[in-house]
Every structure is written in structure tokens, then in C-alpha cells.
Length: 119
Image (cartoon, rainbow, N blue to C red; front, side, top):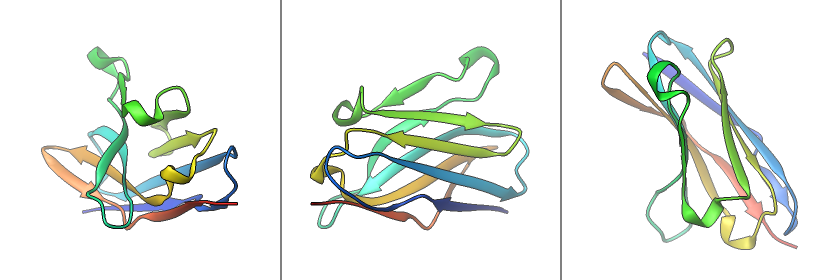
């Protein structure tokens, strides 16, 4: 089994920044993709950003159009952790942010961390 624990959420003013972290533990060998999704009230869960494994993918990244240029995803394989640096936050970024990883064909989700962007 894999356990994912997110941290770093909170309340921030528009234009501010937050850094989310997601640490994986348990059976964490062969982690493939690591990513972040979010779900705003009354909306479906959506992809925010994803980063591939090393090797041939060279840690390729993919971002939702709504966050390109503002958010940056990165990973530290030594710590089994994925990060999401969020800058220039907007009220529409308010959501619960979920960490997601894939490993040996399986998908694992964290329990989420709430990000609220409000003045």
C-alpha cells in the first residue's frame, strides 16, 4: 500500500503564493507519475499539473491551461515527495488540492488539502 500526505494548504490573499507538498510512504518503489488535482465546490475534480518519472520521460510536465505560468510542479525522488509551487493565486484557485501518484499500474490519492484564496 501507498500512503500520501499533503500539506501546505491554507488561506492566502489574491496575488499571494503557497507551496504544497505531498509525501509518499509505504510501498513506494517504482513510483511513476506524480501530480496534483483540485476540486472546487460544486465542480468536478480536474488536473492541475503532473510530472513524469525520470528516464526516457525526463520528468516531463503537463499543466492545466488555467495555471500555466503561475504554478510549478517538481518532485524529489530521494524524499518521495512532489511539490506544487503556486504563485499569483486567484480566487478561482480556491479548491481542495489532491495529490495523485501512479505506481505499477495502480493509482493512489491523498486526502486533500484546502487552499482558499480570498481577501
